[in-house]
Length: 352
Image (cartoon, rainbow, N blue to C red; front, side, top):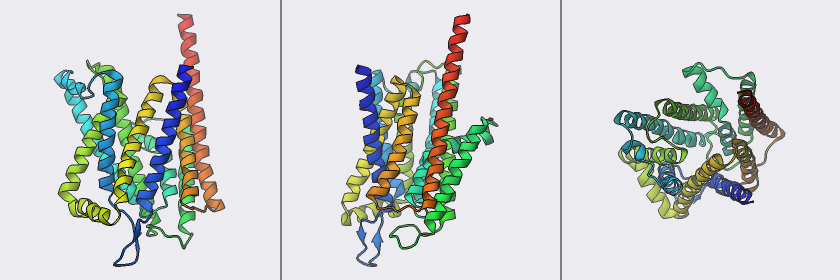
C-alpha cells in the first residue's frame, strides 16, 4: 500500500509539474504579453538564453537538494573523492555535455519563431529520432527495424502537422512563416539532444568499466550538468548578448512584470518534474515512467489546444495520430523486449 501511495504521488507530481511547465513554456515563448505602444504590434518575449539560464539554475539547486537528501552525499564528490584520472574524465565529459545541452535549448526556442508550438511539442516528444541519428553516424549502431519505422512515422507526422498548420492564415502569432527554417532548427536541436543523451550513456558505460570509487548518479548528473549549463549560459549571455537578452529582459519586465514570475515558475516546475522522473526510475519499473511520460505529452497537447484556442484541421490530427501511434508502438515494443530478456535471464539462472 505504501508503494502504491508513493507511485500515485510521483505520477501526480510528474503530471502536475510538467503539464504546468508545458503550459508556461507555450505562454512565455509564443503568446504576446501586450501591444507595443510605439508600433501597436503584439509584444512577444524573445530571450531564450535568459530562460535557459534560469531553468538551469533551478534544476541545479533542486538537483543538489535531492541528491543530498536521497544519498546523504554531495553530488560534487565525484570530483573530490575519486582518483585524479577518474575525476578528470568526469569533469571533461560533463563540460562537453553542458555545451551541447546549452546550445540545444536556445536553438529549439528559436524555432518557435518559425513553427507552431504544437509542432515543436510533437517533434520533441520522440527521443528515438535523435538517438538513432547520433548512434548511426558516430557509433555505427544497428537498430531493430521497428525503430526505423517509428522514427519514420514520427518524422512524417511532424512534417504533415507543421506544413498543414503553415497553410492556415489569420492567427496572431510570432511565427514569420519560415517553416523550413524552423524545422531545420528543430532538427538541429534534436541532434544536439541525441548527442547529449548518447554521450551520457557512454559516460555511464565507462563508469561501469572503470569502476571509480564514487559513481555518477542520475541526481548528481542533474545537479552538476545544470550547474555547468548555468555557468556557460550566464557567461555567454553576459559577454555576448547583454543588450539583446539581459537588458532586453529588464526593459520588457518593466512593462510586463508578470514575465519574471512566469520564467521563475517555469524553471522551478521543470526542476521538480525531473526529480519525480528520478524517483520513479529508482523505485519502479521504467515502463511506468514511459507510460506516464507518453500520456503526459498527449495531455500537454490537449491542454494547449483547449487553453490557447488552437483549431486543428483533419490533416493536422492525422499528423498528431502518426506521432503518438509511433511513440506508443515504440514503448510497447521496448516493454516486450525487456520482458523477454527478463524471462530469459530467469531461465538461465534456473539452469545454473
